[in-house]
Image 1 (tube, rainbow, N blue to C red):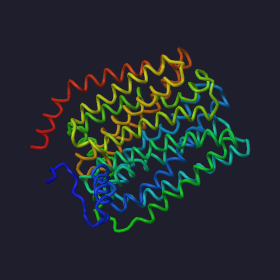
Image 2 (cartoon, rainbow, N blue to C red):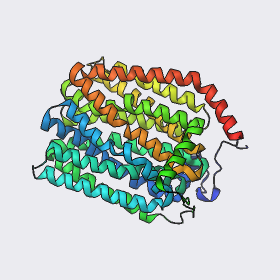
Image 3 (tube, one colour):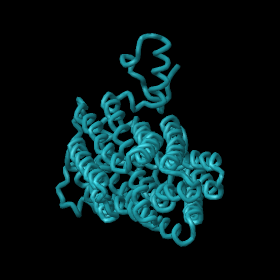
Image 4 (cartoon, rainbow, N blue to C red):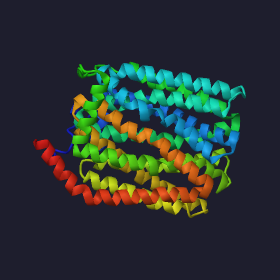
Length: 436
């Protein structure tokens, strides 16, 4: 049997000699080819542990803010504080990522995030935490992420082959979403048993896992760091010009802006929905996050398997519509099993779209601009979240959380329909761009 050009070749020396095991290993590597890379296999478990800790802190912080102020707006404001810095700093971070070794950048950003988690945990444990302390530490964490996130995205291209990037991106998204299943459940238990302070300290400890995984990587390819001779502002301008001229990158960035503002912001309101709609405690809130994350995991697996076999633009639009319709249904139900089902489907649809957006950019970008393009992508994705968080917090406070989420769903559907109609024109423009 011959493999098509879109099928990943399997290195027979990496597969056990037992015929049954050989078949199973081959099938797994065909579905998840990123795991052919030894360094990706080292990266994966460390990042899983670290991201579980990150979700523990995210959930605990939302719950702590709600306990301190009792305000849905403040919950959104605290979430916005950590996503605001990337709006202003990510482009500069992209220049740094293109100039310096990415593993070194990640080592220091992960270490800085670890220190901030320990500081917040100490304040919470001693009972001296205030909303202003939370806002300041969240803002500083956002500054760290303005450099960490584009570095992490660009680093994936150094630990897997280019043809396996889509799989690596999907698996990286799976890490995030598996953590959404496990992290909130652990957070709910820790908050109920010992308080939010312990949750923050656990997150601090989790960073050791990803730091050790970075240090354990061997034989990284000697990919040259881009020699950027112009000053940072000129380098940023060059990256923006490249992104604007590239039809697929330009379209993907416009669409991720819609996702960031009008779709992803529903996550910040889950503590409010858990408490006010379903009368849940912190443990119950963890179930809402977990079910949404479980749907997201299924979505990322689907992207890993089929990302090279489908029309990506239509796949992005379809996932977005599925997300919006299911989340719309979620806002109308007070029946918990139905709510969990809608959250599962919405997580599936949203992450299918977002993972495919990232894979589309990573698979078409020129390596010279990878750091700057990914910093622009993450600037829009993370930097526009404050707009969405503040918007949904304000609408929730004045008109109800259900109405706030439905407005976002309607905007997402309209954008997805527009993408479907524009997909043929974008593909033709990309073909002309490649030929030029």
